[in-house]
Length: 372
Image (cartoon, rainbow, N blue to C red; front, side):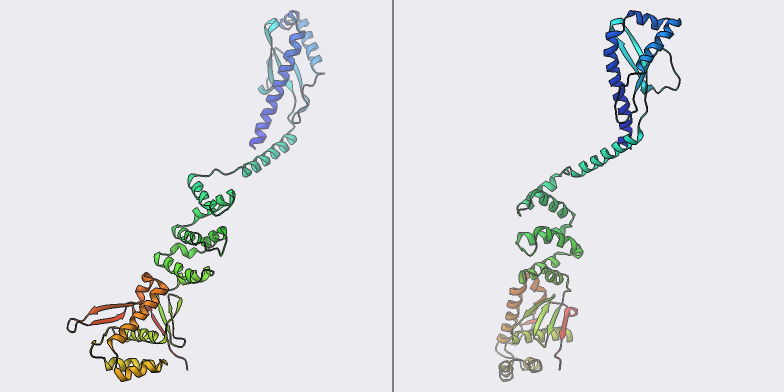
């Protein structure tokens, strides 16, 4: 509509300006003082002169504009009611020091003007969409970051804009993936993956830590790492395979450390979980008997069972197995993640020996028993 309105008034302005220029040139060459006297007189001669000039003008068409009908002009010194002021022009005649007033006769060809303005509006819209969108400083900084990944300028800008739509945790996950050169997906696809995983928005630091841990174990399985990060805090003992599953990650321990770990877990479920270490010079037969029952139930090594029957549970033996458990878990999970699944201790005030139990709460412990 704006283009139509502009075109409407511009067409009128253009024809008025053009005719004004043409009339000025022609009239200044031909009109003398006697014409001026005739125009200013009130008699029949003046009226005849007007008719003659206007008759001559009616044979002249001043415009071939697509939006206007042929334009004619007529001179007058009278005011006419209902005349569009946009169709009035004044022509200066310096030679006879006067100014003549002309009325223009023409019609706007609305259909042509409408078609033209629609085409221009369409082209303008296309041009606007083709213009590069201004880039703010933050986007420029991020664009430079993405250019380091050997993207084109436009690809880098697109990635920078998408990066800004991610929340802080999604950005942290993407940065980890990109900086560690995990090339499972292209940079653009990694961004899309982070954007699609809406759950990442609600992650906390421990979710991110589990994600990184899982991805280091299986760099080619983003979705598996994501599932592990979203898993619940739990430790599952699979008695059948004698494997652990901690926070969704499977860890295979040697058989004897696994059974000691299971022994501590069962104590945590059955009581407060505390087990007092035997004295260094006096193995514990009651604790040995408890371990023997468990090992015979879960197919423990015969040698480990025989040693317990013959010598009881020695402080050195229980310490060694706890240390093996700690070494395996920290090697696999790292110190921070493993801590919640290791042991806490307290000193016995009477014997000066230490009590130990699993650090995790009992509701995190799950045991899958043997199937017959």
